[in-house]
Each structure stands twice: as C-alpha cells, then as structure tokens.
Image: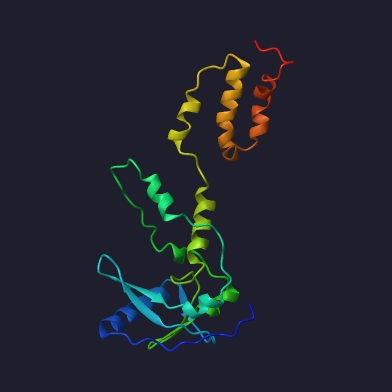
Length: 205
C-alpha cells in the first residue's frame, strides 16, 4: 500500500516466442482475461515450456511481489502430501483448466498487473500466473468451495461400531468420535444424551 509503481523493460523474445505471444494475447483478449492498459506499472513477459511442448505465457512480477503484502493462508507441505501417498499403487491427477483465470482481480488492483509487449500494453482482469499471493488465494477458494472432508476410511470403524452397553464403552466411543468434532456441526448438542449416560447419577439401562 502506498508504494510507487514499478516498471521494467520488456525481455527480448525469440521469433517463435513472438509468434506465440501474438496468438496468446489474442486468445486472452477474446476471452476477456486482459484489456488495454495505461497503468504506470509495467512487468516483462517471458515464456515457460510445458511438458506437452506448448508454451505458457508468464509475467515476471518479481518487483511487484516484493511490494506485496503476503497472504499467510497455509499451503500444503510437500512432505505431508507424500505421506498421504504411502501405500498407494495407482496415481492420477486432475488439472483444473486455467484455474487461476477463473478468479477475477479486484478493480483497484488490475492496473498493478500491467505488462508491456511489442504488440501492446495490457493488464489482467483475472488472476495471472506469477503473483506471489496467487497460490494461497486459489487454495483458499478450493477449500471454501469443496470444504474439508473426513476420509470415509477413517470413520468406517465408527459407523460399524457395535451397540454400547456400559458407561465405560460410551466414554471410549465419545473419546474416539470427539476427535472429529470439528467436522460435525453441533457436536455437543448431538452427543449430549450420550454424555449424560456417563454420569454416576444417571441409571444406564
């Protein structure tokens, strides 16, 4: 906030990259992802080759990122993700098409995304690749859209639990299901009748 605009000169691109740039600018413009700009902010364009041989247009926002207040939303740790794969033998992945481009940039922040090319000066109306807060914002959205769920395999033993017959068995059961109380709205109210049965003054039939 309050930082002076930063402008960097465009990078030199190979002829093949210039051709790719023109095509991608046209596509982004046709989709309404970018628009002409007159912003004092300016970042250069570069290309990253993807595994399938195609090119991803990226904007070098390093100078802008230095001035950005960081979003501290927690991202998954790589080692935690690998721990979840333990024991698996079949792996797959889902590539959410143009995931970042499904998020709109706030109108007052759009000028900060400006980039200059040989073919014109543009700014993003949707979230581009390269912004320091993009991964955190996207992860936050995915968690809010999908929510946080319990692995069905983890609660199978609870669902298959035999009928409780003693106060001790009730305490054991409540201790187990209590671990998942953050996933259960109104847990205390739901478990109230069972909790009462653990009290000495209450007769258990």
